[in-house]
Length: 328
Image (cartoon, rainbow, N blue to C red; front, side, top):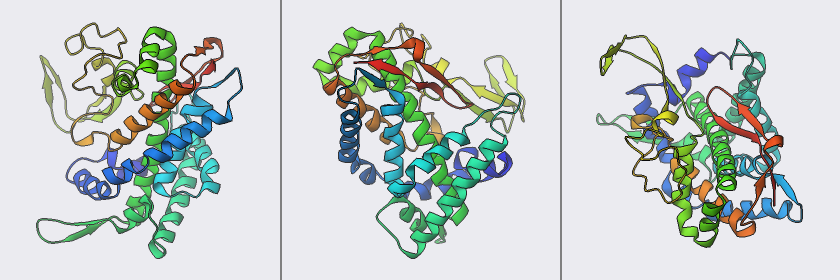
C-alpha cells in the first residue's frame, strides 16, 4: 500500500473541512465515558504484568511492561479478539520498519499496513452485521447531522484507516512515554522516592516526562500558503519539520527547561500537538502513563537501568527505547 493512498485516508494528514468532518465522527466513538471505563482494566493489566516478572532480579521495562500496556489497552478499546492481538502487534511493529535511503515506504512496512487494513476491515464488516460494545462497532454506527440537516457516516475505508491510526499511534507513543519514565526516574532517584511516597504527584510527573522527552518530538507539515515567522517567509508548498520536542525545552516557556522536575507546574506543553490536530487519545495516554507508574512504584519503589543493554528505537515519528533492562 503506497504512502500516497495512506495519506489520502488518514485523518492526521487532512486539513479542515475534511479533517473536521472525520474528527467529529470518530470523537463519537472515542468518548470520555469509554476511556474512563478502562481504568480498572488498565490497573489489573499492569498488576498482572508485574506479577509475571515477580521474583526476578530484573526485567525489560519496555517489552515486559511499557509496550504491552498500550497494545492491550487499544486492542481492548477497539474490540480486537485476544487470540489475534500478538499477530496484530507484530504487524504494527512491521508498519514502522525503516530502511536506509527509503524510510517507511518499503516492502516490509507496506506488507504490514496491507495486513492490518485487511484485518481491521474484516473486523468492521463483522461488527456491521453483529454489533458489540466496542469502538469498532461505534465507528461502524457513528453519525452526525450537519447544519443543513444531512446525515454523515464513516465509510468502511475511513473507519479502517482510523482504527489503524489509533492502534499504531496509540501503541507506539505510549510505549515510549512509559519507557522514558522508567529511564528518567532511575536517573533521578530522589524524585522517584517523592512519587512513591506521594502518588498524587504522579499525574504532574507524567506531564513532565512528556515535556522533557517527548515520545513524538517532530511533526511534519506542508505549507499551503506563504507564511512569515519573524523575518523569514516560508513559501507555499514547503516541507516543514516542526520541532515540538525542542519547543518544550524553550527557556521562555519553561524556566530551567533542561532540568527534569516532577513538581514543575506546567500549564501547557506540545507533546500532544496543538490546535485542530491535538491528539485525540491524550486523555487515554495520560491515564495509561499514570497507572503504569502508580503500579510500578507500588511494587518496586526503586530500580536501576542497565544502560549497556538498552536499545534505542529508530522510526520516523517516535523516539525512545525498544528495550530497557532494569534491575529491581
